[in-house]
Length: 412
Image (tube, rainbow, N blue to C red; front, side, top):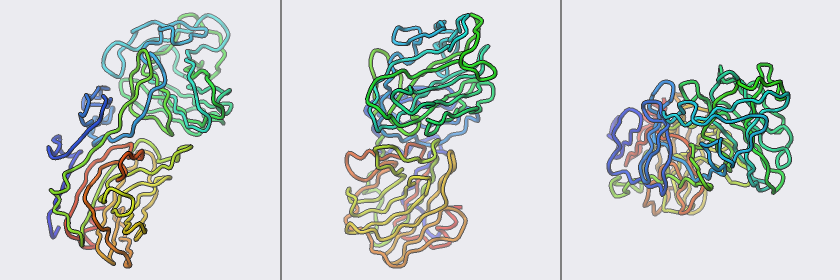
């Protein structure tokens, strides 16, 4: 590089967080720690997440606010949960938290469906995500289902807990998956859009080895379940434990003191790397984009923004005087795909790269005026609801414009 960055935040290759980073979250929040265990970060404590299988550091987790609507999320033996043709053995196994709080769902000796459920109130037009952390015992297949009376019929996902494979997705499900949590645990989830404003049962159901939902139980077999979560959203967020009532996790707010950047209003460079567990979907009733880093005047009129748009499209967007000056776009990112964006910004010379491929340019653009802040993983406007909902791995800022070759190299 012909110049060092004025800012270099590294969240993967360094275990230390720059002490000048301002971080706030008005609640606790969970994350996977370096030992692969699900842990709780305290109020205003940053969450550096790890892969539960490889133990590799993933980056700084930045999420928007979510609310778990399921009560007694770790207590299936509680009366808040309906047990149909099954019983619950409380605290029967070690959970992803590393403590023995996971319950066992044990099937009854009857030829019917065997499931636990909780009635939850839904609002028409909203996307809901229903998830549970599950582990096989004698039974290895399970179904997570949202109610057909409030959603489209067949809003479910079937999973095999011996392999983590999704073996069936109901026609009424918008999307769903099964994520490994380590030590044989998986997080199975389903998303769909509510069609009615009413209450109905969210279920976790056991299946036999042929995936039949109504089968002859033996009165002894079952599987383990814990950490139930129902939330408004197009994909699961980090787990939010509940007891007597619903619980909300506050948004993660990460900023950096602007004065430390020595910002140059005539030219600059911005480079970021990030990853997310979702595929950047749209969400019913929400104008959704996924923000990575933004230099702005605190409004949507003047900014330099790195983001991922719906469908996984990484973008560099420049606006000045409330008019879009440049929008440069890379190839779509898939679930878990590493995102990279490198931008050089100068009047009539906007350059961006998203991989080792050739740079993209826009040679007729003004610079944004009044830039006075840098935000990480969230929209530039106050009270924003649009977040990265993923892991920021690194961020670099240059107070002069890097060369085209340097822009390309930093995105490789």
